[in-house]
Picture 1 (cartoon, rainbow, N blue to C red):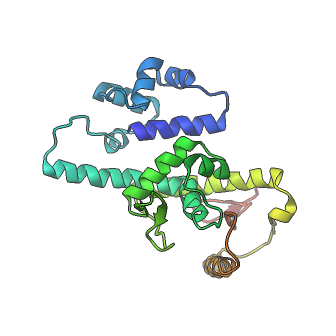
Picture 2: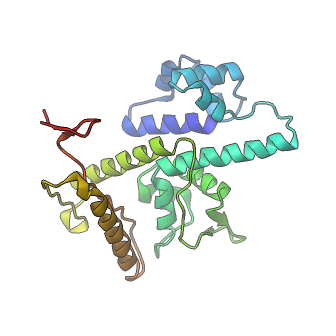
Length: 259
């Protein structure tokens, strides 16, 4: 759960540059010194503190238990196995929801890639702590490994599969939201010659959606294959295609005027 707390703090710092550890501690209603020591893994996360922080983060009892770090150090062989499976699920949770994991994997393919957390952080505009946490997760789920030369290697041959967890649906939604937020930042800050953003509005039948989804999937895969066949990559891009209704659609399938 410590990793989960660290990630929430990093997310809040990204959203608000003025956000501090003191503010985080106040939000959680815990002493800032205790929170600092826990986040830096200088003291164990007790069950009472874990539950208190979990409730402050609006986590359900099941989620709190899911992120349990197994406070006791004395475990049976089966408990160790269960803990390993739990850790893989937690890693999957973050890999699915945070696009910089895929960003790191793609950045590794670029010709000027440097095996350095600070360099990666600068290239992806994230914190170096986020890079280190992401690398740890990618290693644990056997997507990358560190060679004897200390260099990271993608052991999936570039065929990273989508990982599953109990939180898949919500985390995939979160992934898409963040992808769109990055697109907004790109529109505002990146010159038009280095990006492409277009929008079309059309009147269609909902019966055509399965066909549209299949065609979008086909286009996405064909374009990716073609782009990856060009010269050595030097940047990482993200393709976000959205086909969304702007009329209100009720649960019964009726369409109402959008107010």
